[in-house]
Length: 185
Image (cartoon, rainbow, N blue to C red; front, side, top):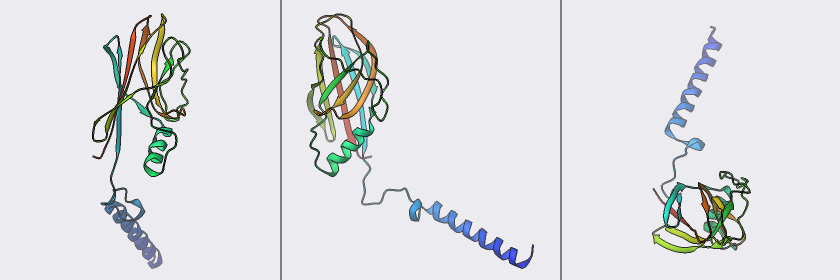
C-alpha cells in the first residue's frame, strides 16, 4: 500500500468511526429519543362481548389508520365528524374478516333483527379512560355475529374487533363494551 492509499484508508476509517459515534450517541437526524419537552401517547383498547350477560370474548382491537388520523385531527384541529360512539356489527353469514389497518376487510353491516349501527353509551372511567357500551336484543333467530367496529356518525372508523362467533336467537342479548384509554408512559 503506497502513501496515498494509506492516507485514503485512514480517512475512510476516521469517517466510519465518526459516523458510528454520531449514530451511537443519538446525535443528529439519527436520534429517535423523544425530546424532553415532548410526550409519548399510547392507545390501548379492548372489547368485551357478552351474550345473555355471559362473557364470551375479550380481546384487543386493531386501531385503523383512519382512526389514527382521526385522533390526530381531533388533537391537532377541529374535527367536524363527531365522536366515535357508534357501535356497528358485522353479519357473519354474509362475511366478516379480521380487521386490517386500512379497514378494507370484509365487513357486511348487520341491519335489522334488532341490530343497527347505533350510538353506544359513553362513560368516563378515569383520566384518559372511557367506555362505549351498547346492549342489542335480537328479534330474529339464527343471527350470526363475530365482528364489531367503533365508528362516528359519518361512518368514519376508529377501530375494529373480531370475536368468537355468537349465534343469537329471538330475545337473546349481545352487549358490546369498548374499553379505551390513552396513556402517557
